[in-house]
Length: 608
Image 1 (cartoon, helix red, strand yellow):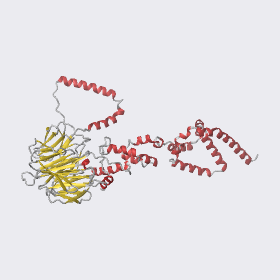
Image 2 (cartoon, rainbow, N blue to C red):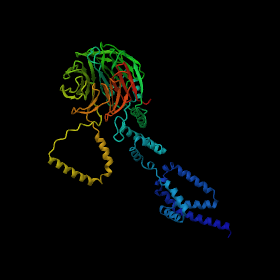
Image 3 (cartoon, helix red, strand yellow):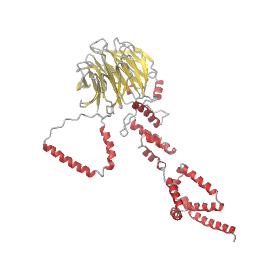
């Protein structure tokens, strides 16, 4: 028999044996659960680009061989592919046992990358999202760069919605970051166009600022106090074209980074002819309103700085103001309060009752509270028209602030802060500690968390027997803790995290500023001073704060930014030439007024 005939005979025999093997096993493989194998899943196979390129390279090498060799190798591959799992292992064992060191080295290097599994692609979608939800924002962005599959998962709205819930309008207990609650400007403009007047609710972020001293009394220097009502802004209604939560987070992260790095732009508003003593702004309706010693009230366009209205009517300087979506209330040293429609410029009503200048005011939906140089606090009821007086201060009342609808906090030149009950019309507490006139006193809003701790009480004098009993009890506790140490090792991170959360307190506090150059943090419940903040070199005239920071303005011409969580001084803004009489705060801006007659807008928004 010739060599050609032998080769053909060999091919026929090989073909028959391979065909028989394939006939026996291929039908079983088609019905076997191999389709669930990671490397053979159709949805995963599309992502295995390196393996596909490797197959192409192997096929090209095969085409360079003789036809008979190609068929033989193809038969081997076909038999291995058709073999059941147990026979595959047997084949591999036989092949590996005949391999030389170069082949074994090749196997070691080739198998290692093939054993790597894209676990996020394999796991159910919900489980993958749950895993990613435990990452921080930076890690999520890194994960999105791994592959298209990971990017699709890492950019999912569910993951970023949870991230926003952890950080926006609060401080995350894990990373310590908190993000501002910004307004949806597009939705707000839409609502403004669809209404005749200003319909945005300024009350969601209202700031009432008041100042206190007449210009014609040389015995008292010009002073200012400020009352700030910072509330959690209501979430705007959902838009049809909803933005991805990742974009929402990113926008707020940029703003927060600007705050941390103290990156801002400054604009100056000029128009008053004398010192500006009170200012409030509302980003919802794009308005800023200021009152001055020139007896006028200016209504400004917040974005453009244009003066929209100049309200005249007071006969002496305007020391206090507050506005919402419908009305403006001003207080003046002419002893009156005026209620205005600031869109038309008309004075709706004039309230008379104080016997001296009105220095401060604050209102909510039911009542208006005013503080005066006549040393009294008056409470006016919008619904019934009733008015009653709270007596107790012995000097000018520089600040009044309604708290929880049933209480009022007031600050006075008599160096005290008083907390009043409106139901009983009595003074609940008198906070004493400042050595100068108190110009501002603001109670904390709901949800304000901080780490201002109560002062430690003096240790009690104990007998030797009591000390010995405590030491024995402490030793027993130490022994019990040592016995549990091993079992609790895995719980240490959780306990540390819980301790950090426990360190935070949500007890209501009052933050005050005084002409003694200090700010103080008080416990509203006990009346104790929790912390005294130093930094200003002259008297503090104005204070404003939210859940992340508070700011103070001083006669030393500076504005200081403090961490609301710990009271740590963060930044000092030096832009004014004269004393800062009033400050107000939002998520993106600090707006200050000065004795030099100018208003400055410090913008920490995204355009920085």
